[in-house]
Length: 127
Length: 174
Image (cartoon, rainbow over all chains, first blue to last red; front, side):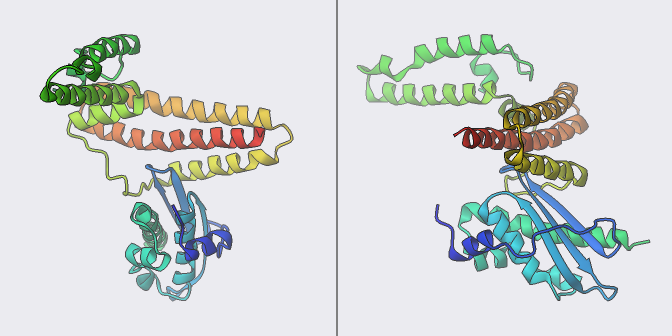
């Protein structure tokens, strides 16, 4: 199966790979996995007091499409508020990367990672 | 007729694999399409259909994870769609660690030893989950079946890791 140029670009030059301290109150961590292919994705967001995403890092073990989806998402969420980031849909990710139907679940994983990170942030700041 | 009924064996998770294989071979012989080479078109088609069904049934029951999934589906517990993400932070953190361990093997001074160690870690964690799933499947309550379904999804991650380890081993030995 041929990957699109954008997938290859993100795969060969992934943006924002790395980790942040998950215990930092400003850091939100979203972990998701896909049992079907065994992919594991970790997305971390650094969120300002005003709820703006200042930085994003990811670490993904999986196929090229999963890596490209998470790399793209780190670019997209930076500068957004957490509410705006929560509106990012997997269809937009899949469209941007021209993912074939069998790889749509990689974009779903990336969307779910954003949601999981936001949930983590909310649970950290609920009390 | 469900897959267990095809082989006339009890519908339970812990199977006698030797018995299953013997029944499979004897049934497969009786429905093998070659036997109907001189039969009517309809007979031939029926034989192909039966033979395929018996094959599918055997492949499903032979593999423990597929068998678990099949038993759960007979009990009305469908596995979530292949597309659904799995979120269990503690478990996924561990998967991340195991993936990192796997990625570091190629830098090891003693690759054989590292591969062996990794295989043992994977096996022991797989076994632990597998036993938990066995217990949950034999309890067969709504709650234990749900738990078994979660165990099964976790086991699939280990199955995948094992494949990755095999691939890595092959590539490093070349």
